[in-house]
Length: 261
Image (cartoon, rainbow, N blue to C red; front, side):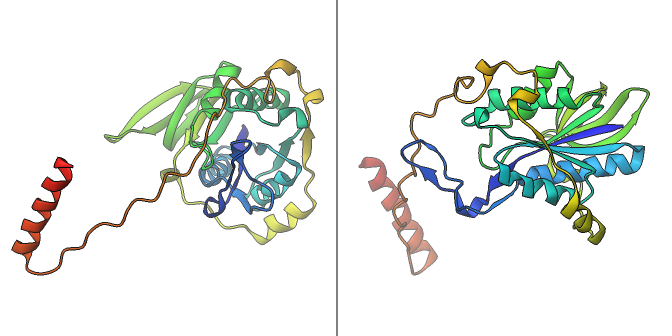
């Protein structure tokens, strides 16, 4: 079975900064990590290979330094890694990103299952995975928390909902997005670390894929961010001290005054 895992390198969530001029994330000088939900996607890809055989190829779109994240994925069991990187991709929104990754996966070819984390921590849109499936005309199952079985060209899985879960059967090839409840990611192995040091990272540029250049980067992105700002800090609340009954009366009085104002 040929398994492709889509992964994104994102800024560490404790260090996210916004450029007020361009309304985009500042990535220079900011520590980057593998998107937390994609860590679970990588682990599930490796587990599927262990259960059913095959290979796991991790794909990411990003700047050259995203190679570090790909090597990190190899330390936990990925077999191959592909870096989709080109200046023409800069500024791509989720629509353009989904298209570019779909074309990269199409170039890889003969994929049985594509696994994505449910969303990225920097954008939180949850749009890229479904966008890839739409571009490739594949069935998709989102918010998967268990893959029960794969046989006879079909996959049976549990899809998490607010009330519990649904049992879904889909034909393959297919794309799924996973939630953190699906597994417990493993730690890098010594063998994996050794392999990652010398593993070849395949590079894909726009010229290497059959892409429509009008659908790349800012030109191919219909989403425009007009303004980003940090909400003002909330004023400190009032603390009531004393007996409970007296504090309750004072709280009610304060709320009434607030509503009148």
